[in-house]
Length: 259
Image 1: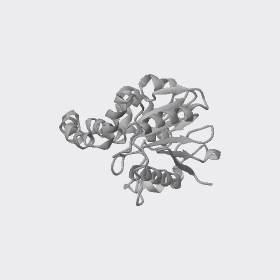
Image 2: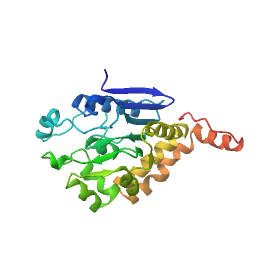
Image 3: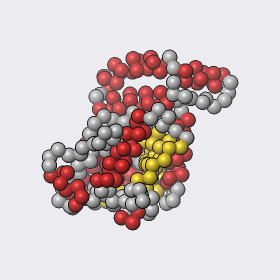
């Protein structure tokens, strides 16, 4: 049985953690399977958005630390195989396409760190989040020390990074870490609805919005301003812009091709 279910449908790549008997604990093989799916999403033109979810009652109990100990001890960290992209977003280039994330039950360590590298998040209201590394003798190495304070504020982040305590879905929603809360069992369907909206939008517009936002976040506002109109120019010459105008005049939903 595959550790990760991957299916492409209607411009969406569904990426499902599939080790429910281990509460989707992430071993190295699962990491590389997810990384391969991210690479596929990024390079295949017909794919416009990813949706990451998990089978079973829990999203993930975290990394299988014994399987990863040697990787962390060598000082080099994560290595990617050909065609893979890091789902944590700390090694290699950033994704060009957005990812929607759906969680339930336990979502610990690597589950949070993958979430911090996604763009729209839905949570079942029974989700429990946590960075437990300090209770296991290490510190968070999948991006939580880099991004969590940006998302929820310095003191909130340190409150949980330094203690290893859990926080709730309602807290995550209050902080803006999660955008929507739903009843348990409804998280996948709501995430799919949001992914479908992204998939129906103009791909060049979506990717341009994501790129501009990320430049502002990582390189600063001045860099984003400098790139704004040069990056917009080729989009404005696309067939999709003409379709957007024509569909507005005809009072119909636009059908975008990404060209």
